[in-house]
Length: 390
Ligand code: EPS
Image (cartoon, rainbow, N blue to C red):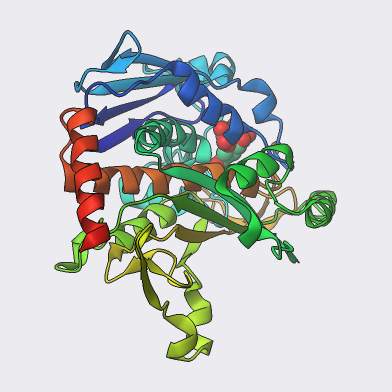
């Protein structure tokens, strides 16, 4: 499977074309809209989210509630477009509007300056419009299609926020929670945290950052359960599925790091405390007694839950000014903003779900073929049965 997205933050709409989704998969607009609305929530969002009410239009590849195997086209409109039609339209600008909303002052931490130099845009709006995290909307829509495919195979996806700023969630109950419980608890939490008292502290931390004109980042975790053993491969660098997931996480706007399983903690531990012992039972087949490696060995899935963490830096659009240089005058100035999110970590958890789900769904298609979901299912069932007795 593959997909491409198009669309600017204040342009008319966001668009995606997805190719390679198996035919006969039940797929409704509601499945996608659910994740779109989950992504819009979260304590710390700015005023833009009050303008948008993200809803998908499926314009190709789905007929009477099922995929046909043809490319799927998805469209999400930007409500804010009504305020930007003159500036962001495809028609030439009127003389009077040429300098309206032109951006000559690059914001530290954004793509503005590097992109402007690279693509030679004296108006950096041409860079910021596309680099904006608004694009995650349409990626979440694509991820929702992937999640729908995973759910056909009984594969379940959840996410939660582990940290916001200096507040680390109390995760002492995490191991006892089922995927459904994590989904349910995080859905009710304004910061998508499984512990209510940590969530309260996280919200206070967001309030504080906001009061001080600052922004705040954090760590999100995605857990995917029910993934068959043997997705991905050890044979070549670009076939390693953990590597693909790493790339997917780092491709999310503002993400600076990724870990699988215990991740960086492995550096401090001895091998005996890191590797997961192998066991076998009639009922489960092969399994690991622990899951410190987060569902991966040798670039392949082990059949244990996949556990992926990503770190999001604080959003670089700050009320508190940071120094930069105007590209017209080359003079320093203090960058300030009119509108921004102070924290988008809870929303980023939903985005992380989408991009990881996409990679797993894609690997599933690669291993089991993807013309018809039922053929695929027969193949998966036979393989899993053989894997158990292997
Ligand atoms: C973003 C800036 C803000 C965010 C936006 C991402 O938008 P605006 O410049 O219109 O105030 O609200 O996020 C979204 C629109 C969204 O849907 O998540 C940025 O610069 O990345």
